[in-house]
Image (tube, rainbow over all chains, first blue to last red):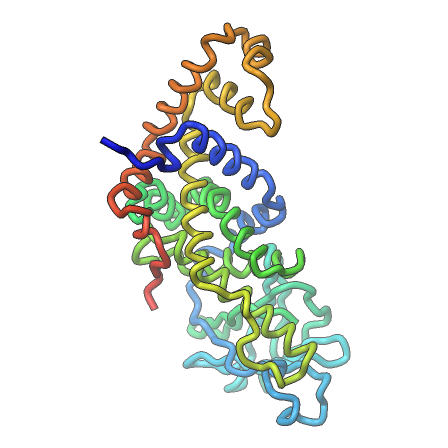
Length: 152
Length: 206
């Protein structure tokens, strides 16, 4: 009976593919694997998710407001809206409805910067994150909201 | 492979807090993410961001994965979407709003499926290789080296008679094929003709 040659029953092809498989795994940059492993630190945060509903960068130029260089975001969850702006090298935010929220800025490698929003819900984060980050806002024991990841 | 028992076990363990299981998931699938990013010709820093987002999204979805066996398909789709996002935002920065829509002529679903199939085979091959005994690993490593040494050199290096290398190679490859990870893939590809059941399955409950 004629058996078609497949990659697994042809010894030479199998050896070649095995070599390729091992070499390609070796060629993957180490950081890509390391950041993947570090991402596990964020497992098991059971907060309500706030989706990105507005990003000034995704608006056509014609409809942008006059402060065209300003980056602005809005995240929305059923219980909380979070407005975010970049101005003067700071991250300015406001949670709506306003309240004294504890706001955490989380970066991809597991670092956290914490600030507190005032009674109007306004908060400032002094240093702009260089990579992807997200915010977690908690008010009292009942409101716990986590934004999706964004990059400035 | 939809019925890959390893990945199901890994996802379930990672869900329960087993960090080693998570690390193995990352090691297994990093080459797939890397390969897809390279197809889109992203810069290194963009690749890092895409990979980061993909891993973080996976961490968030670990608990709600409905079909862990389709993890590779989910990772491929998520990586592709993130790559497209990067390209879109780069186009916008460069050309303003004119090119707001689909930038990606490179985006080709058939290529993505091909990449996925390749990755599945490579994962199975690496897994099977890792399960071989040290003698077989040594011998095969010498064989697939580029411009590989002659049987005489291999024999000298491994303390084998040159005449026994051919039969040993055959025996090691048979052992490789019998390793569960590879055997399951071969069986799946035999059943479907070309392993077409591995593709693009979504596993996340939306």
